[in-house]
Image (cartoon, rainbow, N blue to C red; front, side, top):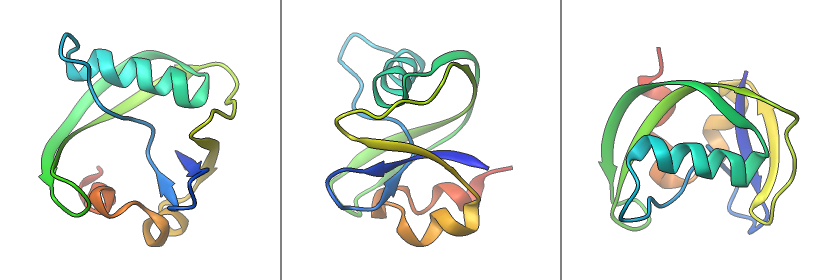
Length: 104
């Protein structure tokens, strides 16, 4: 099972994440975004891989495996939901469609 955001903008599902501020590392941005979007606090993380996509707009994505504490909470971006990859893949944002193919 994977935690994704059922987006409030109607664009489908996305893994928690977002833009890094210029002063943030990829890990710092991930920790902030997970907290903002899900209410969870990251306890441990491992960077898995990076890739670039121009499916929507040009972006560089850094993907982490994360252990977190807390109870998921809705945010303005949407509702966190636990789903199997088979349910996630058809509804993922275009820029994130590659992620399931590279997960261990």
